[in-house]
Length: 106
Image (cartoon, rainbow, N blue to C red):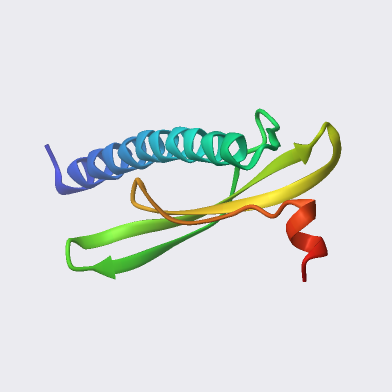
């Protein structure tokens, strides 16, 4: 095999790995978001988890992708709120959900 063929194969394999890793992280973010909404007593709106940003972060364990996802939820079925979740690799870094009661207390 020539060098260019090997390079092309490597690029294709990296893209496949990144795509599969992104699917796995999104599924985990969806599961965590749904559980957090349940814990807060709000309704998680299915199929609303969407990646908004991706970056790279160096940590002791090495290079990790840092992904920001947004999701929608509703309290008592009316209105629509947006929450967000930040995943570092496949681990939760930050989750933000506001309920209307917490808005009134500010």
